[in-house]
Length: 555
Image 1 (cartoon, helix red, strand yellow):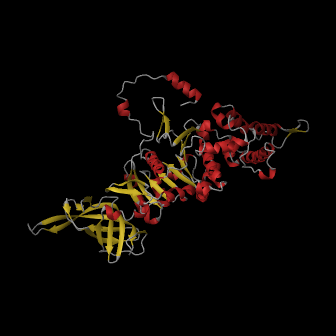
Image 2: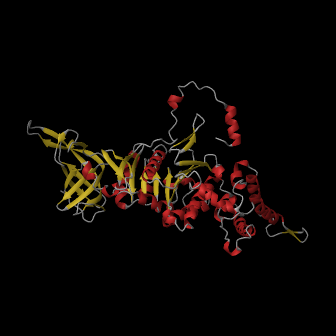
Image 3: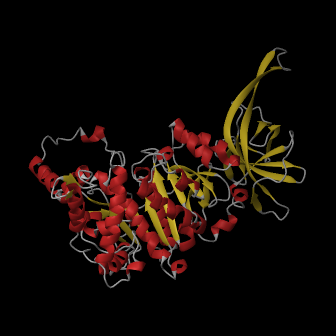
């Protein structure tokens, strides 16, 4: 380790997307360890920042790769040949320091080859995050400078939507929990709804007690079945997703007749509301039995005293079978046979409950979908998201009551366009992405398969937290989403450690690779340790109890 000035090398190549610099030192290995102002800095570490100076131009660049180049040299001591190792680093410019000493994203001017490359201390790096520090929303630290806290702008991050992307085991749930815990410590009056598909944020432990990734006084856990999001709250498109197979040859006729029947039933069941004010999507009660009866009569209708089949005779066989099977299946009772939400007047209580306004009031509502049948999870998930949007859409004080919707495993119910499955749910969530910020509804979409997630939703996200991604399709998809100046930074996605993220977009001053701070408590997302568990003497189980829970659909 040596004491040194900040000058460590010079630029050799300059391009719009990146630059290359050769280090001036020729120490063993090519990359020295320096001590600047009492701080030990490893030169050339990927993810660290360097300052480029060329006359009056000062640029901040991120190290994206490093290598050693060996060159033969004549040794003056021995008179023979020697090998000199010099470090080469590839740099991606992230912004510049203006004449007032403030950091600005983007480059107005470029340096030329020969420009000086300087090491940066934590204090110098802090200039980039200076204006973000005032809100105190720090989420982690720079691995190359552990004392340097990374602060993001929560107003931009939540208001312009955030995508959290990373493969299974990369630390997404860990990161989400850390973000939400930090949110509550900085913004104690938050209103957050978490769609928890796998019971990671609130769960029942082996001790039979409820556990949560948040303090008890800030979180409420709701089983999606007990919350009851009934059929009559679904929009027409969501009803089509739920009841009709779009690949069926008779799907067009079924959709057309469903539109007619649902609209009439909504109007007939609510005589206190002028018919002209009730649309096909109005959140008003109607009887599902009446819907079934209308389809059944049309399907069996004959003319001329039974001599001629009606125009819709036999068109709805599959529709009726599918609907009746679900109506008879107890797993779907929360959706098709609501016990609490059986009138239009119950909608207000539902909204109060899931945004945390019911007593006792809570800042975070975790809605557990782990017990909801797989084939209706997308519809119910999107329905909750749409209710949050509709609530603030019609709320005259929406700007004073922002709501954050956290969508775990978003690719499973907000799929890419092109398929016929879940089209209605996808459109509902895309509307939130496109219009939500106008009405104070923010989105966090979380996915381990970004290339399966709606392009529209991702395109509306202003910020990205990317954890480890090794799938080439996912990496390329993320690269295409971010600004051109930051696209090359996505090459490091496969090298990120667990809990380490690459922050891109509007909520950070520069593209930043950082380590998320550990949440406390942690979510229920750790992998099972096969090695240690298989050393225990657990050679029997209460299988009868397992079967009972399976039958009753109770976890």
